[in-house]
Amino acid sequence: MENSEAFTVPAWVPEGAQRYLAHTETGRSIRDIARSAGCHASTILRQIRKVEMRRDDPLVDAALHSLAKSHFPTVDHQSGAFIAAPPNIDAHTAADTQFELEALRVLRRMCESGAVLAVAEDMDKAVVVRDSGEGGTTKTAVVDCEIAQALALKDWISCDNPGRISRYRISTSGRAALSHLIAEAENRARTQSEFGMAEAQTPFQPATARSDAARQPRVRYSTVESPLIALARRRDRDGKPFLDETLVSAGERLREDFELAQIGPQVTQNWDRFLTAGVGGDFVANGQIGQGPSGARDRVARALSDLGPGLSDVALRCCCYLEGLELAEKRMGWSARSGKIVLRIALQRLKRHYEEQAERDRMIG
Image 1 (cartoon, rainbow, N blue to C red):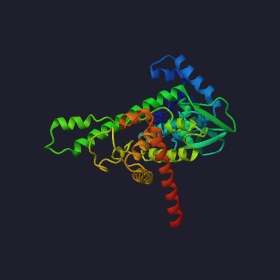
Image 2: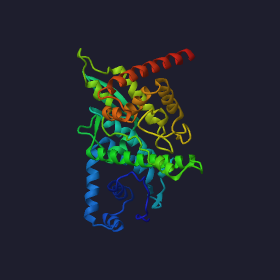
Image 3: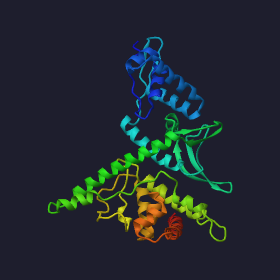
Image 4: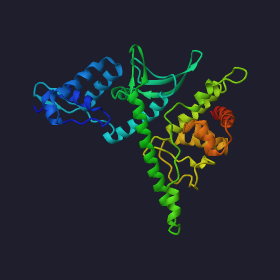
């Protein structure tokens, strides 16, 4: 029986966890792993001990158990031979890409003030909830437990007190990872945008015009909390929240569909046709649209179209791109402190859009 045979795991699995599984699941010695890795045996020992100590965390333990079952063999004790584990449904590359997309979606939510990931025992889904004040909470995302396990194994989320319902918060390394994932998403979006522009250019268009179009700035995703949450904490003259929970929920619903629409071979969709200022250039509406879930993409398009110019702009920037109000005002050429008023009007119109949509759906049903 050859214990040193290599077994592959998804690229997102941390190096320490890979070596821990190689030691515990295939029986490879620490010295053997160290020779393969080109490091000292004490380094491998520290990594293995560190992973073992983290198995008190229910998500970490479940992640290791799942990886061992799906990517490592069992041993036939009669013949002494390895029995290959069943192959994964998805190829490793596809699984890694899907993990990055989901990690980006979930970590953005967990960066919001008062947000936690709640995981209950024996449930296949976890939820991100946010403290909405006065003892209330708002659900902002639903997460497959496999994704939550991966985030915990990578130490991007942490739990101080595991229990029947464990609550995880984003860690320092999770915030750093989010910035890295956002940068990668922007790079892919920029590459796709430049490629689409190059395909759309005619042979008679001057080279300077093509280069100017390629340099058009992209709207940057923010790693901070949504402007809606910050505004919801403000009070008007009567002491009431500037944005009530129904308006925040309308904006969060638009954002949820927007993020769902990004999942697919192309990470980001082009929504520039709904921007009336700040991001220049003519754009072919559906020329390079991605392959995200069509239902979510259509819902976003209908909502933004219903809002119309100006209102769709501020909703897209603040609810979806998470631009701050000051930046949105600057991009759109508005006067200072006018953005929050326009945003509230946009959210009121968005709320009415969803109510009318629900009424139409009931009539059809």
